Image (cartoon, rainbow, N blue to C red; front, side):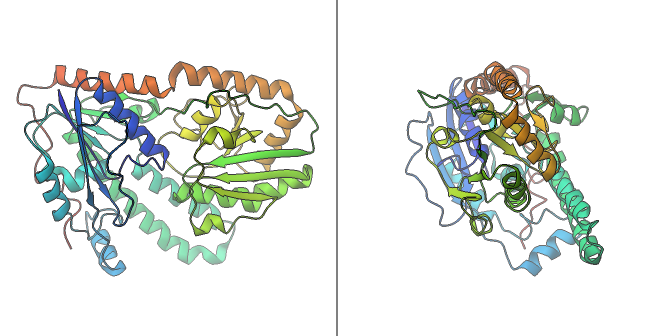
Length: 429
């Protein structure tokens, strides 16, 4: 079997949970055939010569076109049926030409990561059965962000005129992503999502929907999590992830500006550690010892050994949070918002503590500090769930099964994405 894996971001070097998912999907596909990888990338981004030790036949990256002036982007987005802002006004002709040059011979299967990838590269894809991975629903994320803005604005009436404009633009953005995603669903022989919740949302819209869950990283050899004694004066809460990703930036600000002061008022030695590649907005939150921004760390286990609790204060987003799975794997109790736990079918007080306000999050942290039995129960259940369903090796097995099952059920015409349609939402300026 020959498989072409196509993505709008490079899997290597691994810089985010989404990139890690792509890597393990590719490893799963390599269990059943030879995999070629084509990805877009931002100009100037480091490009390793090859994905070291990965089972890939060929890999090439094409530069993502730079966005035009803001005015041109908004004009394209706001026209009837316009694309999301991230794609508006960009000309992907050179990327499609590079893909056409890269494709050699016939492929048995196409695996396309994300609806926007199919939208901009679809006309250049070869004809073959198509799997589209919608593990991160951008339309739901845009809609949730709009709801969050309006909820914040309810406490500040003077901002309502500006918020009304932002809400209208947010609804247009969500509609643009929804059009792309529904076209991808219509074109695919198989749609893959990361949770049963997202599968239920697509029921009746797709030919077939399969759940390939996200996974978490197992601890480094010799991992031995510490246990905090009740009443201890110091307490370390950690939030980790790609800290340039807007929902994570929003969460980091909440932790630094609202949760950290509440923790220190009750436990003077408490600190919040923000772990991961950070932009200027998060770097500005560095205020030791109250808030520590570590930047990128090569070994997550070495960082998490300091953690008494993993905080997941996500207020808007989509998909499932790999950071919860990593915490479960490392036997660290989790305090999360309802949105942060979406798609994982968690139970408050069983495998996580759910807290949707800064005060509730701080209170939950203090409960974990005072109640060792609660902490141990959460850790045990989280660890069980991780090893039962969310190891990356299990994700690879399921990705391989999707590939083989898709080929066994497609029609003999080996249909692929409709040419001239998948690319329509992202026209040249």
